[in-house]
Image 1 (tube, rainbow, N blue to C red):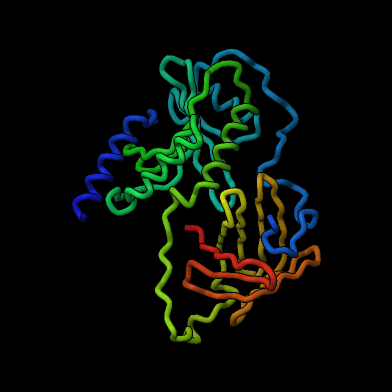
Image 2 (cartoon, one colour):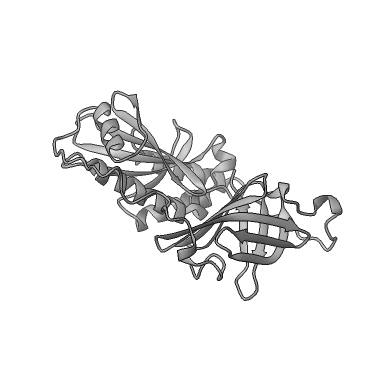
Length: 296
């Protein structure tokens, strides 16, 4: 069996390589959509201008300018490649837009997870999951790129009648797809073995021990992200079926309870269970328990 897995992994990598490109209910039932920030996460409009050029793109400078026209920060990486980033909490995805040699297509490549040791970090189960996700979400393709040493999500689009907003829409949809499938491609955090021994005082939660970004998902279309800061503040984001809500305020972690008090007056208190330095569970009365994992 130990010999079978490396063989299976190698076979799948070869298959994937052949197709690689050149390159709510609410978060907690108490949260209301109307109580969050006015600004949406990525915005649905840019500066009010829209590129209307329908000519074929012939250089990476044109790709960069097109991305900028849609409100994205972009730069030229090579003669045929422009790069940008797409943030969808808790992820920040690096994006490459690559112009084909014959200039008939552009390939949008979104980086997912860096892979340094394929044998250890890219098991056959992950590769099979990515292949299945590719079939279900065609023409999007999940694959491993050996030169860039990472898993990626890519999409080929025709170099015809492109606008900056259209290109931005493609990138936005890819980010939503990547986030909704992160249980497939993201590295799994090991859950420590349960023990009957209660945690020692040294492992009791404090405000500072929660500093950082955390995320939890309830389904493929519902996810939550929260950032705790060292000064005792939080920023909370909830995404469900493409709709997003945000809230912010102060938080307190003590013993087996976590309390969040929003600037809009909302108060969330519930049972806190700390599994490790990178995982905790939070449950408010009459609400399902959520497992939050710390972003790497």
